[in-house]
Image (cartoon, rainbow, N blue to C red; front, side, top):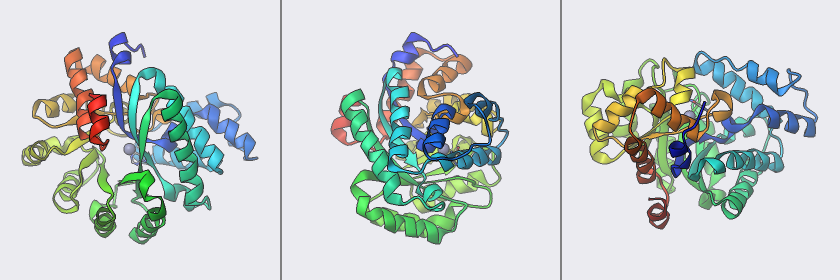
Length: 326
Ligand code: HPA
Ligand code: ZN
């Protein structure tokens, strides 16, 4: 995909990227070799060719499989540094980055290993690349809420390194209400709240209503099919609850990019934003996702600037930083 000079130069904020979803096949091989792990592929090209997702489940299988190479704090540092180096030339200025601690603790990698590796990369990226970032800890919704609660408690010693909590993984059969008490406790501990409401899944609109009215999230990840309920659209526009949409990801795991819905929602006053989700798996970082909106939506540069501004507005950056990002 060709990125226009305007899109490339636009100062960007990323609010929906899973750090584990930035693991490129080349780094996967490097880490596998370092850790003495045999991958079921011979080359990075073979890994890439195996990425043929037609729904969330087929993506999640590859996503969790790929994580086996992440073992040490050094590995998590390498993962995050590779991401920062990739997006620095795309003029990414600030990122709120999801991480999935349970995807690691469930296979015996300690929480401390994960977060210290990521944290070291964040500090270095700020110093060397000028990218400021923050972490959002996601709970895996296909595990039990008791495990999420235990993870929340385990995170408390690292409270100052984590801005908020989210909810990801397979939404089918795992509604937000399952995690209501975990999110209530997270809020009481001072964490900000967001949750994935994937598009095109059964019950999605009910899930969206729950996260707004009962859980009390500040943002919704994906969630563009809120258009099915104009009353909810009015409510989030009024409250400034933003959506973090991921156009290229949506082409893989739902029935299209949702660019038309991004345009519609922006027109209705919703703070909708453009993000990358799992760029190493879906083949597009932040700039490619803006370019996708530009190409498919036939929108003006002013519109793209407005999307970037929305991301600053709904970010959880401190006021001083927000002023700089604007
Ligand atoms: N959807 C749900 N869970 C996820 C995703 C996603 O796109 N990426 C990583 N975890
Ligand atoms: Zn996501």
